[in-house]
Length: 454
Image 1: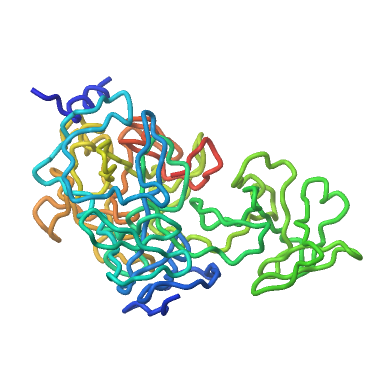
Image 2: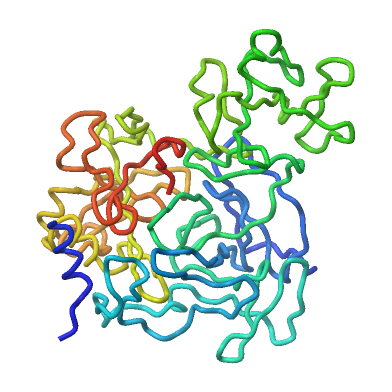
């Protein structure tokens, strides 16, 4: 008899076109939105701002578009190659591939009777039979003969987890997933920044960096379009130089520190790098009073029901009592590398890793975070849902035994039964590959501390 993956997991745990506007628009509840470079789009496509991933491309219904880039896993690669054939097909996968040791290939996947195919979860964005390339957009022929849109050589998909404009529930631009597997990511236009800058998605927003990834900072001691950082200040901070050919554009300006010495400003703030920064996307400079990281777009504030807590491994989101919040991650090891962290997915992985398959034990180790009835947020990234704690699947509102719980990216959030006081974080890394593949990670707000990104 073929061995099942869940049985082994449980044992391990025990041990040029027109830019047509979509039907409706969503505007994130933040003060400033990221500017982007205008570029030709296929007919019906446009750009939509989102809560945490900045501007993204959307189809005629306003739904986010994604790609599945090739990722290197422990025992091979998964995803789609640039300018290659689409790999997301309509054949149901039944066994593991063995790409993520220590689990070998050939193990039966759970809940095969309800397991979807790749295209059921990731509908390909079909192009008309006579479609022509438009800028970075092209077409590729699928195995069934239909044409599919591509962007920068990668086939383009939608996610069934997105149901309205502004949602990005299928994946994230945020890096650092490590052993979490081969995940999809939203696609979007290039940020409108000068060539020596870049924008990186982190837990707190769209972070402005140099083209090499070093963080950009601003200082409260400056004045609009004027730098007061001189003498001793320059021993810790370096003004970001603007070349002689640099010109003001949009939210960007150039000031003269001294004759012939020019410096960039953004939204009126003079820009600096921190001399002590020795790794990309650092937030350490913002620990200095008066200094701040610079963002092209900051994430919406967390709901008032939550707090922030400092733990031994970084700052996390916590519930109203100060208990650390955890996010559940799951990606299976089938050929199509589907995520398994949503309540509509199989719950076998989650139940195995947090309760040996026992829902009651799982509810004790990682209880859902209850949400008040009728609570509203002004974002799409935070929300609520009804779940059946016995199955982990969505439930009808007010159904007997159902729980009304908080969600982030349309997925429930949790606390941990072993955390007793604010700042405790005993559940971080609980599961496979330190919680990255199938398990729980603290809801960190510091990507630069102990590789908390993802």
